[in-house]
Length: 257
Length: 332
Image (cartoon, rainbow over all chains, first blue to last red; front, top):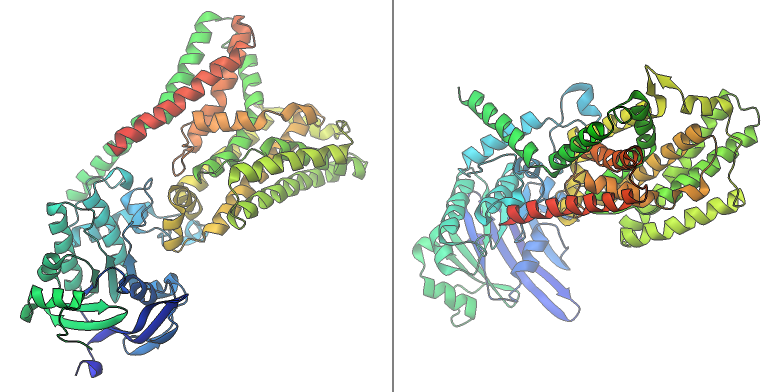
């Protein structure tokens, strides 16, 4: 029933990718529905990173298809994926530490002034600051000083800036690669709240995570990879942590594809 | 209203961040030096003549430092600017000599030749840094030797003294009492400062210096930006070469062996971080003037001229120390 589902915004079918003799993905499937938080789980080496890199345009699959809103797509660069409305927040956040949050939010996509000045490259800092403030407010991200360097900010605030930047540009899907790995308890809660707010804006979130409690708290669904294939799909509200752990470790074959 | 109070806050924040800038420390040091020398030698230091001389001395260095500011903000370094200046001035002087008539056409073509030679070397530096991924220190150490060697080849090791008289007059002319080359240098600095602070080009320069991988992921054409920045450094060296011909009426083949270090010293004193991502054109201007004021002041006050190098060294180390302290505080 899943395969004909029209709720999918992004889907991968029978994706294969090898690096030398290593088969990272052996016909993996993956689905992202519209307006959901889906957790992508799996042990180290299960192929999560490879799959995310393919879906966000960093690398190309050897075979298989990726569909965005039902149409086949082949991204040859992350820029193409981004232009198609797919944003990724990497673990390192990819911020420019010596620039302020506003400059980071608009990095590479600066708003220019109107008229001749804009055409010769003048940026409109006031407009960018206004729009950044709107985004920060909408996602309830506290950024105390819009002029401070992001390098001086806490891990949670930096994560907030990186997510806000991605959300500003993500029309369809936002990939978050272990966004809470480096955060404390309270900051983790803030990021999870942020993920829910992103979803409520209609952007689907793919959460790559190792933390079962975190996934149970924030995700609507879970898809599990093992040895390069999808081995489990769970709706969080009707599944137990044990079932998911079983799929990750291979102890059970529940929901195997 | 909310927007008003946030504007107030942002103005206060801007003022506070300005005070915290290492540039401000250096501005205070510059003012302190001027005041101290003026008190020590009230009849000789704070004079129009000395001010004029200071501006003339600063002009060429300032133009080169403008280009170096862009380079150092990208966390790069350009050791070749002194050699590029020599090469560009030799080529420019030879071209003007070849024209023979020393007229306005020769003077204009000489400018084009100096600019083209400078940009050419800058382009080479940029391509080697961005595409061949060779560290800037090594690339520009190589072109330092290559550009100097080639200028010796072209000139036969002898300074070209046939600079058109008109150009030499222009180089020593004054408008409203201000040396023309200082006005030219000032205009270049203002334009470059505006580009750095207010344009996409400037923003991307900071971005690639801050984290080139982040910049790449953000869709910035990182390689092209590096090439452009090193080409600007070459361009300013070419313009510096032309101003040097205008001022001295001759090439200065042997006179630029430490120009690169003077330029880097000025930029770093001005608060631009060697770690990249931070810098300010106004700081560079201040950084250019501090060593020159020290040199002039020591001579006028009667301290042996050799002491100036020691004093500039102290200021340089102090500038980097201030920057690092600030960095540590920010990280803590």
